[in-house]
Length: 131
Image 1 (cartoon, rainbow, N blue to C red):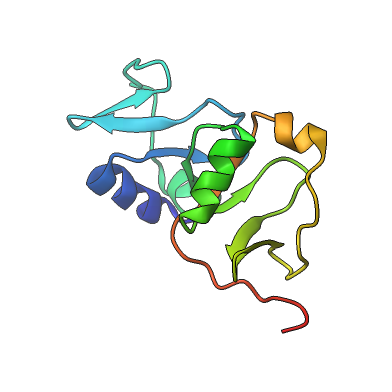
Image 2: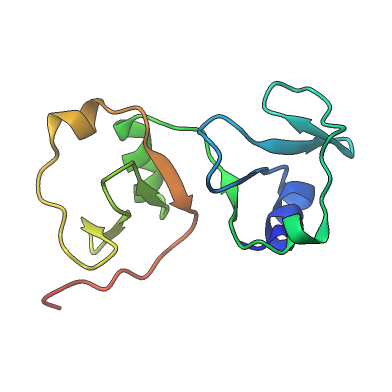
């Protein structure tokens, strides 16, 4: 996403924003017009230069979650992921990968993982293979 897109979400919705390459848990947010980091510390060193702002690697930050929380979010229309799993969303009552393959079974590792996160909110049209 472009900076202006995440800035709009931060201002209007109170979203946490970050660069996509930042480690989990690192983000900025606005509190009464003041930029704070993940620890609630005033970030006086934030210099949103033109070079910084034109990068398309900004994203809305979502806290990592358990598999159960991720499935609940997906049932509500969100697209979910975890490292190495690809993006998943529900279509026709079944869980599908973003390339249309049906997600069959869940490994114990995925079920126990706490590093799931929401990629995007809202309904997503999944292309379903064989339909």
